[in-house]
Image (cartoon, rainbow, N blue to C red):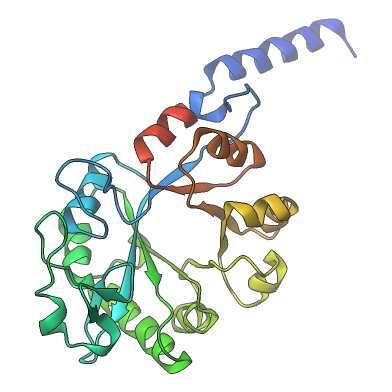
Length: 266
């Protein structure tokens, strides 16, 4: 190789490295890629906020995060409520009416929100932050599919198909979402399926607990080779965040979005 050409190529490579954004470098200095941050149940570990609340979504939007994750349940009268557990203050959401659920008060003083209320925030307060909707496993496969149908119908009503992604531990819910919209970004949460199996079902990504990737680190590269994205949940400590960045995940779901951003270097 001509030495002059080699020197020019080396100089150009070094210049690209110097100009690369800090988010492309891991804590150990190894080159990685841009990692998106998803606030777990919204940005709730901050003053005035609460898990799965309107404020937690707004605060995630204020940080301009990639996404804000919420959890949803279908009531007896077909309304989609937002809460993590199936029960709140003794009220089983899936077995109650929306009138009862909407009277429940969160720790920050808000009433428990419905999914339309949060979709309204996404629609009227554009920030680039996506809503990551987790369809919780309900009492039966039929209820899982009904919840998936109701959620997707609401997203379509607001015209937010490009602003929403879906996750679930229920394979019934995941498959129903894919059946309803083959272009929807759907990811399975349980951590017991290899990427190829989910890709064959039309899932766009995998979204697994950190321990699943420690057991199967090869799944990250396998998913990427299939054109799938990779998210890891839910990690808050520095070492795990650095570990997953170096493994090559695309997104990190965390209760500590501000600290995660510092570690990524964005």
